[in-house]
Image (tube, rainbow, N blue to C red; front, side, top):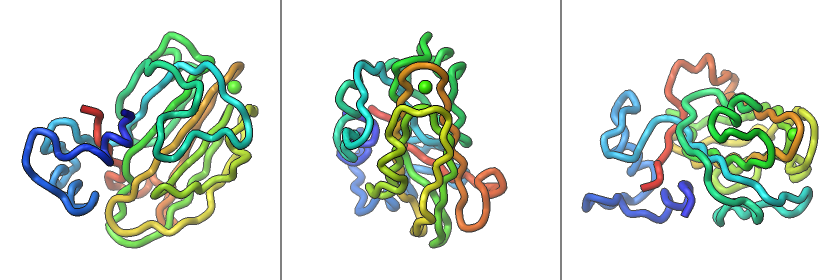
Length: 203
Ligand SMILES: [Ca+2]
């Protein structure tokens, strides 16, 4: 079970609390500064790197709620990403001792105090796909073998509270790069001055 599905499926393991919504769950689990109140819940998006055997362009996207894409093998590393997403050869090499044929899943929640909008400005080599609240928000053509390619999401509505986000990325060969810059409303992430990402770590 991957982390995203673990979040969706698991009861609050180890206690008897029940939560009506993800927002209720997160309010309980996170302190005022994003400190974890229950083991396994953390600030930051949660990233996992998988060995990759086969990825095809085009319409062979991984399913939204299923396991990573066909051809994604063993998980080689996992851990939190606290703010900007800047993945390259060194990032991958340091964590997996390799920099080619890797798939990365980054999942968690985007937090916004009030209703707003979200926009992503991405550069990706090779393919990337982004789901917000299980909706695909960048073009299907972004899931492809390609050199560093600028990709802009639509400006999408962002509800108040915690909204699930899932970013999938793959690197075939050659150089690797994934930069994701977030804007909430008209403000870029690095200027927001607040904790905006949370995750539920696999138990
Ligand atoms: Ca590449």
